[in-house]
View (cartoon, helix red, strand yellow):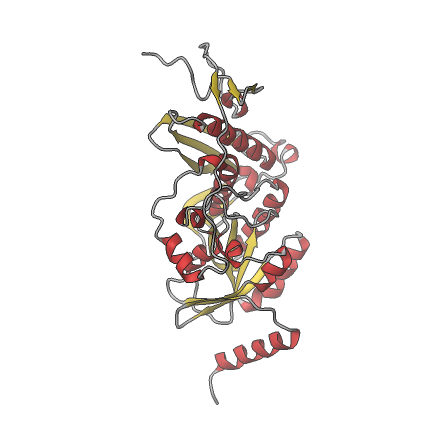
Length: 368
């Protein structure tokens, strides 16, 4: 039997209101030669369930997140989650070999979707709408879209170089975020694991200015939480600034190891970096800057970003470039050659920081 509706090409009536555009129109797909019946659905909000303990054990929370082998698409947060999914896949390209800028990239979107549950098609519409809006704001193309019926909902984002006319000499004038001869290879340009250099720095850079929120995250799924707000990722200009300056640091060899902050948040990314050594980090500056009172939000919220390792000798240059591009970063700690993962939250006085720096330098030189 031929279906009478198409999730991509049908018009949508959501919560009694007819939407202006179809997903296909928002995503720039060719027009269909068929007439499709409209899809009528309603938004299903997350029911408030569960609550984190006032002071959850960080190690237990990390273990719970790491045990989540398969993250389900948080349907009730489909819009925000879609922006996060696009953001983290774009960030992952930063560490790859080649020469490119963010405008040289294009994304493919592959939705595997359960259409039978009330609210799921409304959630798909919100996902497609967010994908189109965020990609347009970033100035990147969507050049491949798939929608397949499935028993569960998921979204796969692929990033590749944008195909374009090599003879278009006006491209760089019209689209300054492009490079003339971009190259994007599959190999990785920097290490994925921390190098055991105790004088080097671990730096955290969130790629959006939004607040740290846990809804839709692995931690919220591990604890069975829902009903609160998810990260509101959407500051495309700031995302682009972060992308370009970090990519420049990677190409210049300033970054010696790096990881994308994605599912599981910053602490999960840091844990994955601790393959050949450990790490000690202090999140007090992040907490203070964001006015955040809950450590678990900073550690587990899935705001797209990066963790970078840079040499101490390159720190001043790195700092100057971040300041020049008006990109906020947080030096959170150092590798620990002996192993282990230590997370602290305390403010240091200027004198204490100087003393710690001197002790670190003396310790690295050995005893006379």
